[in-house]
Image 1 (cartoon, rainbow, N blue to C red):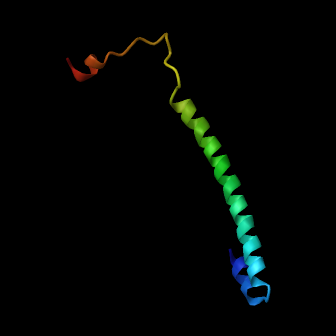
Image 2 (cartoon, rainbow, N blue to C red):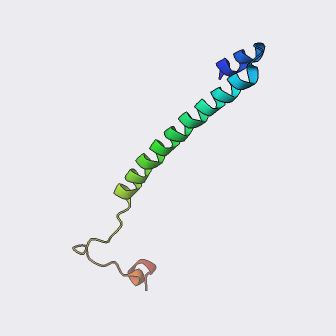
Image 3 (spheres, rainbow, N blue to C red):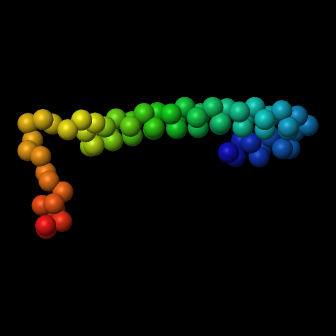
Length: 66
């Protein structure tokens, strides 16, 4: 971020800032996409999509106490 403010002293400050912000935006987008993909994998491992048929059925009434 410091290199963005360092460019304000030059006459071409605006193009330098815009190119720096575009670069940082692209880097942030890639980093966010990778994070989302990793998190989705961990969530899928933690919460199964389908119920295991070998597991016995848990009745809701037994949890409530009826």
